[in-house]
Amino acid sequence: MSNAAQASAASSAQRRASPWRSTNAFCGPMATTLGADLGVDGADITVTCGATEALDVLALSLYGPGDEVLMLEPVFDVYIPQARLAGATPVTVPMRLDPVTGWSFDPGALGAAVTPRTRALLLNSPFNPTGTVFTPDELADIVALARQHDLWIISDEVYDELYFGERPVSVRTLAPERTFTVGSAGKRLEATGWRVGWIAAPPGLGAGLSGMRQLTSFCSPAPLQAAVAAALPIARQDGFYDTLRAGYAERLALLSGGLRDLGASVFEPRGTYFLTARHTHWTAGSLVEQAGVAVIPGEAFYVRHTAPQGLLRVAFCKSTEDIHLALERLERYVRSQS
Image (cartoon, rainbow, N blue to C red; front, side, top):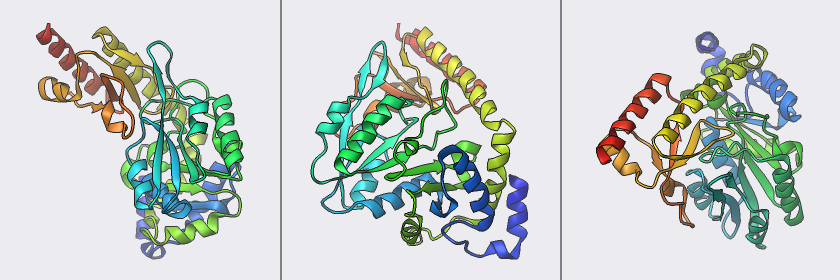
């Protein structure tokens, strides 16, 4: 991937701004990769500077003043300000957290939140921060709701290759006519600093979406597009994603087991590289100040409802050495509190 980027950077043609609908070098492999996964035509793919910009382009394109956007809570932090910057009102519906079975959502509560002003439903699966992967039945309920009320579905699937167990079902396969799928080369290829993402639009809507995209950062860096184009088909062919998942599964087992040994309740994720946990005597502030371990408090993901008491999001996108070190520090902290 680095070699492809270097070769592209050395090319005079790739020193110019690339078309915002993707360069030919990127679009071919992209269409092949997503075509196999989702049945996407290359003409409906818009390349962006990472998934965050993809979500912003969709917010600016699909809703505006007076509109409402449904999303589940806890909610990934960029969704709320992006909706507000577009002039829309974010409407959050709380997920349920059962001490035994973990996270779930209530389709009835989601449906009850729809109003005549609702324009879109924003979905994240695998879900940051909970690690939830929605089942085919749950997705079918969401699609039925969207069709009943004629809602767009924005499906944030940046962790589509980072799952544990059965492969996630993309909602696009159930409702291609109303689903905008967001993806990320940074998450797939462990190159988050490269900022290459994409939007797969419903059939025939890619051109209009690309027109809005040119008004943001105009284009993604051409050399990095070429590098990602070279890497995506190789990653699937050579089993890179299988190796990626196996490595994260090992780190997840290490972290979740260690946290349980220290008295925390852990809610196992089915995807992403985050887990959620609860401990009656831990707060994010006390852990960073007294234990030297940084986690995210659950309240950071709630804007309308109250976060479950003691909820923490813990990342395992770290080396096993770092995870061991964090667990050792937590163990010392627990001993100091007893």
